Amino acid sequence: MSGLGKIVARVLSCPIRAAVGLRMLDGHRGMEVASHLKGRLGSAMRKHLLRKMGAQIGRNAYIAGGCEFWFEDAGLLKIGESTQVDRDCRFGELMPCKYEVEIGDHARLFDGLRFGAYAGPIRIGERSRLNFFGVYRGPVTVGNDVEIAHHCVIVGAGRDFEDVEKPLLEGNVPTKPVVIGDSVWIGSNVTIVPGITIGEHAVVGANSVVTRDIPSYCVAAGCPARVIKRYDFDKKEWIRVITENKQS
Ligand SMILES: CC(C)(COP(=O)(O)OP(=O)(O)OC[C@H]1O[C@@H](n2cnc3c(N)ncnc32)[C@H](O)[C@@H]1OP(=O)(O)O)[C@@H](O)C(=O)NCCC(=O)NCCS
Image: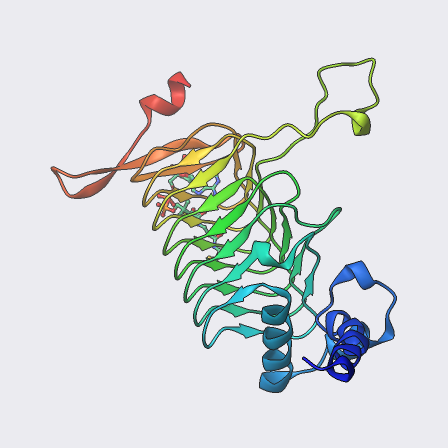
C-alpha cells in the first residue's frame, strides 16, 4: 500500500471500527449512526468491517442493526454461514470477550441476546435457535438443532462467595462449563447454573431452575428441575417418572 493509502486507511479505521459498534471506541458518534443502519446494506457493511478486523463471518450471514461487538480481539468471533443475528444482540457484557464466541451455520440469534465470554468460550451449534433476551456466559456449549426459548439465563461462570472475609466482587470468577446436547428444547424463563450437562433430545419445562444434570431423552421441570418423563425406547413412548421425583 502506498504512503497515502496507509494514511487514508488509518484515518478510516476509527469510524470503521466504531461503525460496527466496537465498544472500545465508545462515545464515537459514528458508532451510534452506522451500527443502526438498517437492512441488507447495514448488514453487509457490518460483516465487511468485522471481517476486516479479523472476525470470521460466514457466507450469507445476516447481522441486524444495533448489535455490539466488544472483543479483546475480533479474531475470537466466528459467525457461521447463513446464520442470522437479530437486532440489539450484544457480544461482550460487563467486560469484553476474551474467549471465542462461535456460532454455527444456519443458526438464529433472536433480538436482544447477551453473550459474555470473559471467563470461558461460548459455542452454539448448527441450526440452533436462541430466542429473545437470553443471557449466555461462557463456558457454555450448545449443540446442534437446539431450541432455547426467550428469557433464559445460561451461565458457566459464577461468583466466589466461599471466603466471607473477602468482598464478593474481589474474588475470582469460578467457572464450570454448561454443556447442552443436540436436539434439546429449553422452555422460556429457564435458568441453568454452572456445571450442568443436559443430554441429547432432553426437554426442560418453562420457568425451571436446572441445578442437576438432565439425562438424554428426559423431560425435566420445576424449581429445582426434576425428571418428570423419560423416553422408553422399547415401548417407543414417553413414560411418566413418578417414583424418581418422590425419592429425589
Ligand atoms: C415441560 C413441558 C414440555 C411438558 O409438557 P408435557 O409433556 O405435556 O407435560 P404434562 O402436561 O403431561 O405435565 C406432566 C407433569 O409435569 C408438570 N409440569 C409440566 N410442565 C411443568 C413446568 N414447566 N414446571 C413445573 N411442572 C411442570 C405438570 O404439572 C404435570 O404434573 P402433574 O401431573 O402433577 O399435574 C411443558 O409443560 C413446558 O413447560 N413447555 C415449555 C413451553 C415454553 O416455554 N414454550 C416457549 C416457546 S418455545
